[in-house]
Image (cartoon, rainbow, N blue to C red; front, side, top):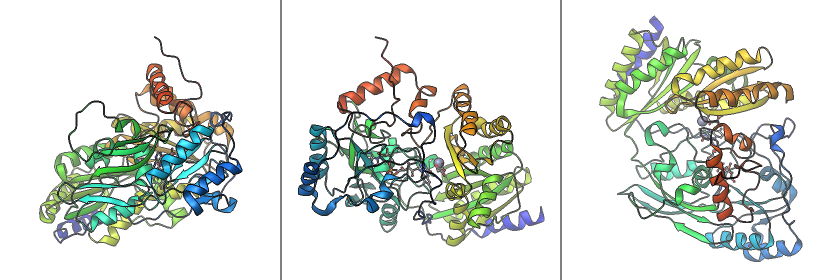
Length: 517
Ligand code: FAD
Ligand code: MLT
Ligand code: ZN
């Protein structure tokens, strides 16, 4: 315990001023392909009878976009394959509009011609939603990256959908503000993609979901109509809140072209702590203690298990700065008064140590160490891709149940998998269960699914907490939604996209239920 106190003792020196630090992590290039495939048999729908892109279509697109029509197969390659390199489309056209008007003209034309379209942001999605399944046209927002306005008084940022999250964070940091959203893919993902997936990430615990912080958005409907809900008001109860339909709709209801987001002030003081626990029960008790003692300054409470720590060491050569423990916690505090925050953190850590909830830990007092500690949590996704074929699950459950799924899955699979690991957002009750095997293994998959979905449904969880359904999870929607709800979703889809050209084969199941009335 001596070393424990020595390490944690550094907390008393936290009074010095801190610059806000977010992990600067432009995503590494995707790992080498390990055989491209769809993850499960249900991920292979029939091609629907859409038109195929003709020379006349290309002429039209070139007339409005000039040289922003990409048909070179080499350039198309990276847009046809998802980040996990588990789903591949065969699109022959990538369109790169710069304005809402151009998106509108494209969709109007595609609707008339019955051409299917896949909207694409940073292509970091993890459920196969961002790439075509067949030859859908890829509509990329990468050139729609203008900041439209920022109001320093209210903290409201309005920008085009293709702004990269990390660039927005940087822009705001210079203006003493920050994005309410942070995730490991920040160097590549677009704010439009974040909104389209309703991404959660590392700070949801503190700043809430995009359903609360997105104040308005602009979307182009499948027939080219522009829906301007780009409000920048905190309060607006005039009728139905249509923007909510597009948040989390994964490109199936419209193309989001601009958003306005409520951004918090940049905290004056940020601290990051890595703690080790003997059991998940102690981790949960630490969370409870933390909520009580850190209160309003708590901005993240994340965890990884010892298998994840081993992956980081084995594949990325990242070092664990504390002794080996079964579970690790990353806690971030953000506040306006460094002395006040340091005192609170000190009291919390002292209590956590004396009550033996925590067996080891370290506190980051410098930017580089803050970054290094966050890397241990944020780079687990990347480390996993080097371990073999990855079966990824993203579930939310009552928080006291989240790790039980990992334990039950390990027992259920016996020695059938290479690794069964758990990490995620404890504060949000969100577990990332990942299972690796040295190669794609249909019999392993058959052991995992539907077990994982049945287990989650039995414990009243959601089979997709934050990644969405995309292509891979669409047919499992019934584990988390009643038939009536799915039926209503299908009707909304039919109303907004009657020809079904927007991101076909995604989000909704292949066979939609009929409503009971
Ligand atoms: P894409 O991957 O390009 O697209 C995702 C979906 O949104 C697709 O269905 C696409 O059609 C649609 N879409 C994209 N742009 C638009 C638009 N303008 N209009 C309409 N539809 C659109 N996710 C989390 O929730 N939390 C995390 O902590 C997290 N961490 C991650 C860490 C890593 C290392 C990686 C690789 C991914 C992580 N993700 C996480 C998943 C992913 O980054 C998010 O889902 C992100 O929001 C996707 O943004 P994107 O711009 O890359 O969208
Ligand atoms: C995370 O929290 O790290 C992301 O959601 C990515 C993942 O699930 O691997
Ligand atoms: Zn996550």
